[in-house]
Image (tube, rainbow, N blue to C red; front, side):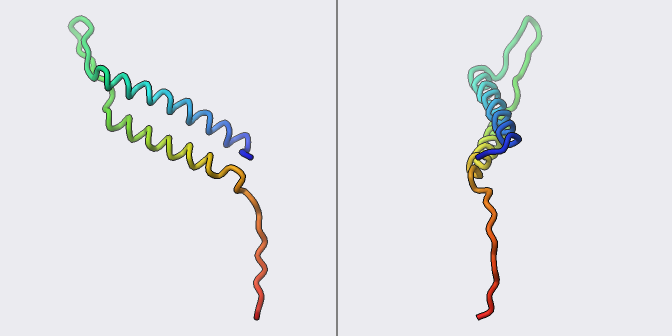
Length: 79
C-alpha cells in the first residue's frame, strides 16, 4: 500500500504529465504562430518529450514499489 506522501506525489506527477501531453499536442499542431505583428514560438518539442519520458518513469517507479516495503531479517549461520 502506498503511503500518503507517495500517493500525493503520484497524483502530482500524473497531473503534470497530463499538462505535458497537452503541451506536446499544442506544439505538434502549431509550433509557431502570429498575433498581429508578433510572432510567438512554443517550447521545444524534444524538451517536452524528455520531460514526458522522465515523468512516466517516475510514475512507473512509484507504482512498482507498491507493496514491496517489507522488512526481512537475515541470520548469518556458520556451517
